[in-house]
Image 1 (cartoon, rainbow, N blue to C red):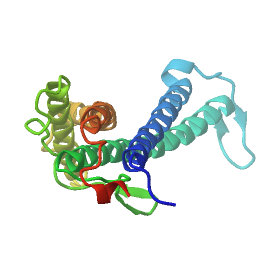
Image 2: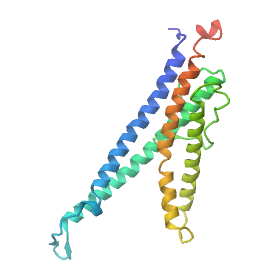
Image 3: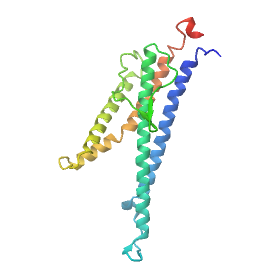
Length: 220
């Protein structure tokens, strides 16, 4: 069956929207994981003081032991989901930006295209493309530019934190500075997701001027 005139931009919109939906699922899961982890914080919970003797060993506090074990489990889950959310959010940001760039350049992509390895999307190492000039009078352009700068700064800090983590001796670094940088880097997923949303709105804008076929052959 011949491809319809509108099939390319409908499937492209669906592709971008599905990426955003995936990132939203991970974002909600991470929020739940953070809440669960906080629920088992020893400094908040105040475990029961009662102890018991383990045969051949010392006394243990069973309630505190259970809380610590559950806290460790929830922390691991939160870390895993954070990685998934960050990867999906960056895929949403880069994939949608690439789609906008392609359409602005006269392309007719039918889907977002990204590499995938070990169940993770391969995120380009280059910064997000600068779409400011190409979007022309689009009212959301300045917001997209500002969000791009935020994502770029988050990526810079994230790389710095990852590099610092390879040092065996962190004595040259102030602990408060490292903690602040880590917290800032942790916001990369949210920043990328916000950029993805803004880029998706920009895609809808540019598609309104690109739906008509340029030639009779393209319409067949």
